[in-house]
Each structure stands twice: as structure tokens, then as C-alpha cells.
Image 1 (spheres, rainbow, N blue to C red):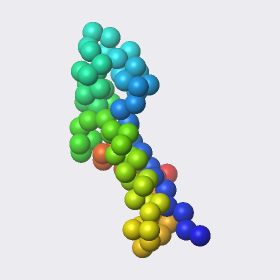
Image 2: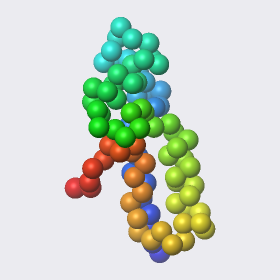
Image 3: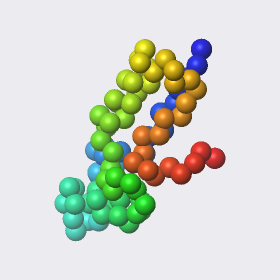
Image 4: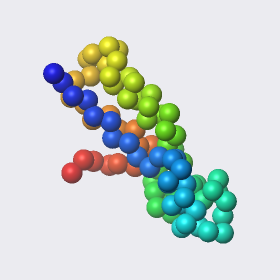
Length: 86
């Protein structure tokens, strides 16, 4: 049996939205997420929080027969945030 792993990055969930708005109380929820990314993850390739469905799509692929040739991989779904696995 081979195990593929999904490594998600900062994801736009309700809890993360609450956290971001707590960091930027003068901004709306919609504005706080991008500010959080600019401040805390300035090198993100996509420059935004990942949507939960983007991670779900990666999980669906990694567990499907189409990923048969993907053996023991760490699939980063992080928008360019995780530089390496320590």
C-alpha cells in the first residue's frame, strides 16, 4: 500500500476568517483575509487564502484511480507557502 499525503496551506475557512478579522478589526471579513496574506505570507504565489474545495479536489484526485502513478507523494496545496518539509 502506498500513501499519498495532502499538505494544505492557509485555507479560507470560517475559523480562519474570524482569526484574520481579529487581527484587522477595522476591516470587513472579505478585506481581512487578503491583508492577512499580505502581512503574514507575502511570498504566496496566489496571494490569497486557499478555498476548501481546492483542497477537496486534490484529496479526490490523490485517492482516485487517476493517481495510480503517484506513489508516496506529498502533494502541496498551499499556494506556494510551504517551502520544504522539515
